[in-house]
Length: 93
Image 1 (spheres, rainbow, N blue to C red):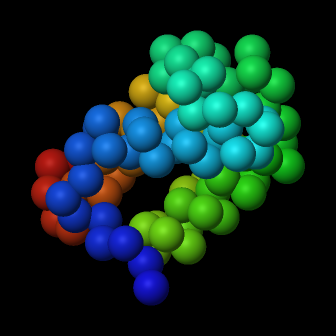
Image 2 (image 1 turned 90 degrees about the horizontal axis):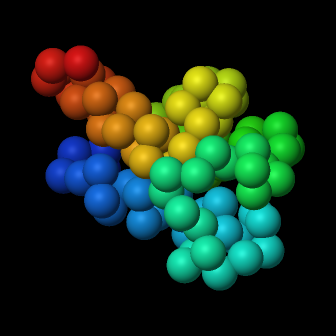
């Protein structure tokens, strides 16, 4: 069952994203600095595509696979998701 897109914070999404990215990169979540570009960790297009699939599955929200490059850090991606979630529920973008 998807997690509702409401009630999330940048912090909770940063944690969730860091954990997922660490899994794909075979690292510990504590090793993922939310301000370091994902490309510096070696995140490739396959992992980025998988991450978008996880977001769709867990949050019932479709995210373009290019988002990992458009928002190249965990922090930037989390902030983008919050804005998108707010827009999807009728809030301000």
